[in-house]
Length: 172
Ligand code: GTP
Ligand code: MG
Picture 1: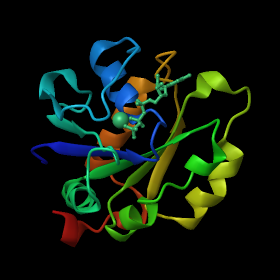
Picture 2 (picture 1 turned 90 degrees about the horizontal axis):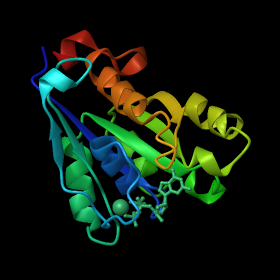
Picture 3 (picture 1 turned 180 degrees about the vertical axis):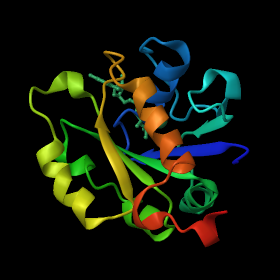
């Protein structure tokens, strides 16, 4: 059994990483957020899988590339957040670095409240190309949509990995 799970959020500036974390914690959409949320730990008894879960924010405005690589290397799963209304944010700059570290990735399309159409068509080719991507989810911090689900998927990707990342000899 794992003793804990470390979830890192990365993505282009302003896609809503900090808002997602704060919304999960307070169950309401914060009007104002800092660049970077403090690391939070969710105690085992309130997580669906009963494992303490650390959630780590990243902000280009406050952190160096060096700090980003350190966080990527410590993470058990990385949520690659993009904004569904901004095509340029779909493939963020740390994306390829995350892929290199071979941790499970979750694609998170935030701000679903702003669009009528799903971004799935656009992200499906990305998912097919990178086997590291465990799943994708569209959500809205503003409408509190799919927030707990996204952190649950991240937890699940670590605790019950599927696909080619799972190698029983190596991951024990
Ligand atoms: P950096 O820290 O600069 O990298 O940005 P970030 O990714 O942490 O984004 P942040 O949470 O600061 O949000 C950026 C802006 O998007 C803020 O004005 C938020 O209020 C807004 N925002 C965040 N989530 C949503 C959402 O689900 N819907 C809408 N409409 N706006 C959102
Ligand atoms: Mg932020």
